[in-house]
Image 1 (cartoon, rainbow, N blue to C red):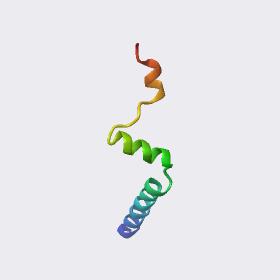
Image 2 (tube, rainbow, N blue to C red):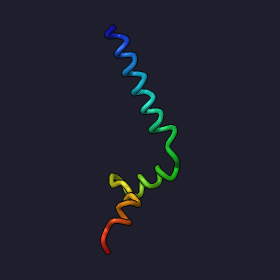
Image 3 (tube, rainbow, N blue to C red):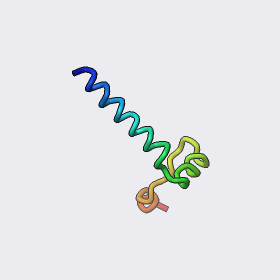
Image 4 (tube, rainbow, N blue to C red):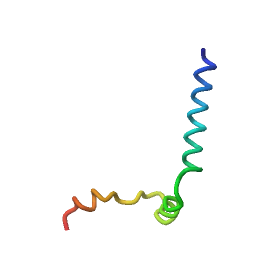
Amino acid sequence: MMTDSISTLLALLMAHLGGDFLLQGKAWVQSKKSLQHRSPPSTSMLVCMPC
């Protein structure tokens, strides 16, 4: 029973890592490189911010 849980956890971890590294677009990678650890502002924040 414990091995089933570990196998499921490892499968989910592998799927997550695969999605992070294989499926993200080039624009996301370029944005990450240019902004380093900051995330880009969302469009809703830009609309709601006072001028």
